[in-house]
Image 1 (tube, rainbow, N blue to C red):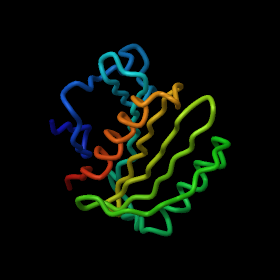
Image 2 (image 1 turned 45 degrees about the vertical axis):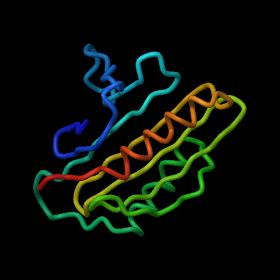
Image 3 (image 1 turned 30 degrees about the horizontal axis):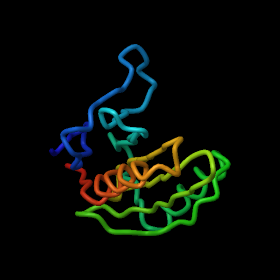
Image 4 (image 1 turned 90 degrees about the vertical axis):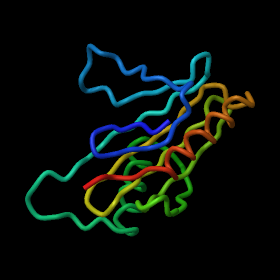
Amino acid sequence: MRHRLSSFSFDVPEEWGDITPDNDPTYPFTMALDGGIGVIQVSLAEWKGGPRPEIDEAKLAEMFASYCVSQGLDLQAETFQGQSPLGVGGRHISSKELFAAWYVSDGQNVALVTYVSQFPDEPASENELSVARRLVSSASFRG
């Protein structure tokens, strides 16, 4: 199923539903599999006017590194190309959680997509992570 979040769209299985709290507008868009063990969150930064940003691979890598430092994460960055946007992301597995993050951009808009599960040893975590990866690789922005 194709899902649209403002200018950002992506593919996600129908079994994944929106669980974003209605009473907190600062909370990022959040999806979970019914009966699943992890969540996918999406945060957007959209260009609305002023000087057009020029977000390239180096800038995305810088944003990803800054995010990892601010969150105390040790994620190895990997660059990828989705349908049209460029992306940088990585994952980390500890005894307590499986965490992955990706920055995706079309050069002017940016989405931060994360997946987290507190059950890293469960096969379902890897299955859900695969869904998150497919979401990121299917992502696109409309102008």
